[in-house]
Length: 130
Image 1 (cartoon, rainbow, N blue to C red):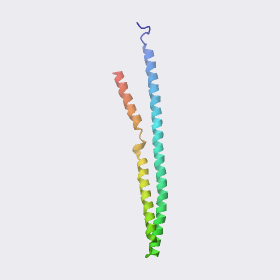
Image 2 (cartoon, rainbow, N blue to C red):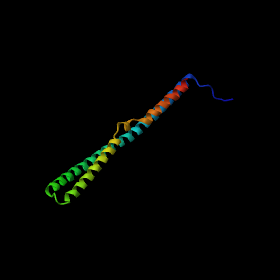
Image 3 (cartoon, rainbow, N blue to C red):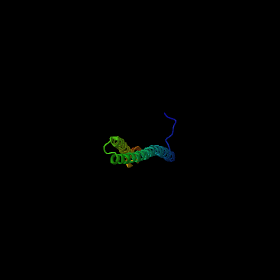
Image 4 (tube, rainbow, N blue to C red):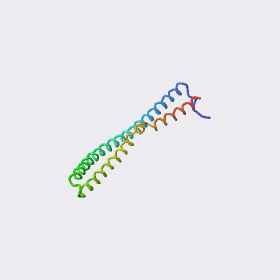
């Protein structure tokens, strides 16, 4: 036989409240960690846009220089080299914009793990009550 007496209603309520507080504290910690991770991704996306802007400006400079060389030196090949460099910089800027756009998508900010965990917690609580 066990020496432990059955728990009173008051003890059960206190234990349930303590468990709910612990659960809420854990869910909030998960939410904070997930949001910090998502904000980091957003910051990386912003940096990529900044880097893309630098490459885009450089591409405009090179393409402009290529146009000038092309008009000035139609028969020489220097403008082709400048055009290739400017085109390559424009491609790099385009790739960086695409990567930055993907990193900054709104879906990356959603706290998906927290939502899934809250759904599971609700299901567990529903099962306990029934």
